[in-house]
Every structure is written in structure tokens, then in C-alpha cells.
Length: 520
Image (cartoon, rainbow, N blue to C red):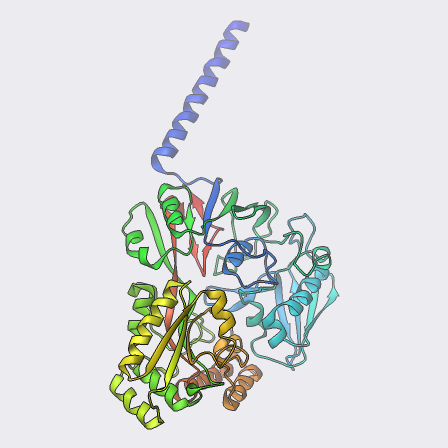
């Protein structure tokens, strides 16, 4: 009897093993999606730091947006909405913001996020962030109770929450003790409330994160950076791969699941590869030519307007990125996808490509074959290519243009002296409010200093409603195109993200989001 019982148990075990084997084979044959696995992402540069209060590096942001979260964030329409805040109230005078915090949200160290952590983090951000120092000067955060914080402002502004939802130097919430022990070089531990927690950083090789099993998801469907964030993979490895051909080969062989910042020249080739999926993510920003308004011939607005009249923006953008699917022609300095701020005001003066009219305008403005120095860099192909085409267009207008190419660090140093240059090619990243735009920053090379620009910007920030603020921004952008002409915006351009075909439900929003995605 004992032998017979042992025989039955053995037979049952064999049946179960065969069944499991068949299930595994079925899963492999059908490409069934399962939870788990390691997601390998190739990034183009090593982040300078993972302390996001200190950096605007896109590579740092791509990593840390998985580790840290903020009081407010951007939804799919680039609007500021609550994230770690459950609700937000604003006083009638606009000087006091009250944030009710979500309860039960844990940091990666196991401690619950409370008001003291938010106050410490936000006051440090107000001190370290360049945009916070400029636009929220004098603001302070205070604890009201364990789950409530208040932000007190010196002046009311319509764009406060938009500033807080920005990507560069974003206001990550960290434990108070981590903030308080930070040195001038940054925090010593990378602890947030995000869906992934930091594990290891091997310099120049990789950064490893793992799924945070105690992550407290927000309510609502995934919407940009807001809403639910369900993690299906076990961990993520960000591999630092500076050579674009190595990133391309790695995603082809499956060594990497996702490759960021792929070369523009390879877009058509990548799109033709059936085993890959390639996305054009319009998160990069704009390509422009800045005019030196502090010194030299470009201080004459008539000459700036003449050059703008002759510029063929389509030709410049096509040369810059090589494919019409990778750029958009739009006169807006804010992302066309930003529902609160996007406007096409000034479109009448955009992409005119009227060389003969430009010649006449230059003559009327008193241009007399003076040398015009055009600065650009050879370190970024899209900026270099744009500068070559722009020089050709300037020459056709009858301008004596001299193109000077520098490596990026040298260009940054030389452009700070207004005696060195007249026009300069630059790329500008997207911002969440007009007040953050470099094109109207009086300290940024190009030196936009104009009474009407300043007055309208003040009216934008003091507007009582978002609708009124947007109307004033449209008025300011119209004035910039019609009269002042601080830059000529060529167009908006994408970054290229390539993945294997073994991923499902990948969301692209400014970057490849690593929650919701599943591996086959």
C-alpha cells in the first residue's frame, strides 16, 4: 500500500511538471506578456548628479523621474496637476497656497512622507533652483500640520504651479534628514517616493533601479506624469552609452530594450527595421537664431526684422534634423502641445522666405556690407547643420556673414561677451511658463531688454486667471515677432527613441516612461 501511494505521488508530480513545461512553451510560442524582468535603457551621457535640485541635465531627469516625485506634475496636456498633493487651495489674494498631502505615501527607506519632509525639500529647491530664485523670490514653505504645508509668496503670480511642475531642476520631495545632511555637492543618498528605488551607480557604466514594492499609486488613469503608475518589471538598468552607433547596435541585438537620443541621420533606417519600434518624441524644444541686442549691428531692430523676412525656416529645419517627421513649423515659443500657453500669435511674420524683400529692408535699414559674425557649435550636428544653411541664406540676402564654429564649452564662454558675435544658433528646451523662456531673459546671451517685453511679462504673471494670462502672452509673442524680434525661431524638433518589439504598453511623454510597460 505504501509503495502504491508513492507511485501515485510520483505520477502526479510528473503530470504537473509536464503541464508546467507545456505552459512555458505556450508562453514562449505566443509571446505572452508576463510581469517581471529587467528593463535595459541606453542613455547618451552620464548624469552629472542624481540630485535634481541641482541639475537640468536631460539624462539625469530621465533617470530620476522614476525615483522622485513632486507636489504637482504635468499631465498629458502639460498642465500642472496634483501628484503628492491631494488638494491645493489658493487664498483670494494669491499669496498663500495650501497643499494637503496624500497620506500613506512611503519613501524608499520605509518612512512615511510627511509635511516636515515636504517643507525641507521645497525650501531647499527654492534656494537651489535658478528658476525658483528668479520667479519665486522670497517664497517660503511652512508646516501647518502633519499632512498640510503652506507656501507663502511675496507677490501673487499666475504661473506658480506651472513653475513647480517644470522638468529642469524639478522640486523632488526627499526625506528631511537627507535634505538637511546635503553638502554643496548634493545629497548623499537618492531616496524618493517614486515607483522605482535607487540601487547602484557604477560610474560611466550603469545606474540600477528596482521596483519599489511599497509604492503608493495615485488615483486616475496614467496621464502624462500624473495618475496611476503600475510597475510590471523587476528592475531597470540605465546603461551609459555615449556612442550612438553602439546604442543602435545594442537595441538591434536586444542588448538594450530602449535606446534614447538616437541620431537623426538614422531615423529612416530605424523606421524600416521590423524588429524595432521607433518614436519621434517632441520633447526637445526649438532651434533658433539669437540676435545680439547689446552690441554691434544687430542692435538695430530693422536689420533683425529684415533677416527674419528672408529666412526659410523649413530649409533650416530640414537640414538640422534631416526628416520632415522630426520637426514642426510653428511660431510658438512654448510647446505646441501645451494647452495652457501654446499660441500661434505672430505667424504672419514666420517663415516668410522672401529674400528680395529682405534685401530691400536691409538697404532701407542702412546695412552697408558690415561683417556679421555667426556663432555655432560642431558638437551638436543639428545646430551645426542649421548654421551652415543659415549662412547660405544670409549670403543670398546680401549679408557679409562669417561662420565661426566652436566646441560647446568654448562657445558657452565666448558667447557671454557681446563684443564677440552678432547672431548665434542655439537650441532651447521647453519650459512650462513664458516667464522661464531664455528668449526674454535679459541676462541670457542675446540680452533681451525692452520696456514693453518687461511690462507684458509682468501683466502675464499678475493676471487673475489663466485665460487672461494666455491672452497677454499671445500679445507679447505677437510683439516679439512684429516689432522687437529678439530671436528668429526656426521650428520645433523631436528626439528619437527606439525600442525592441518585445515591449507592450510603452508610454512616450517627453521620454519613455518606465511604468505601465511590460516585457514579452
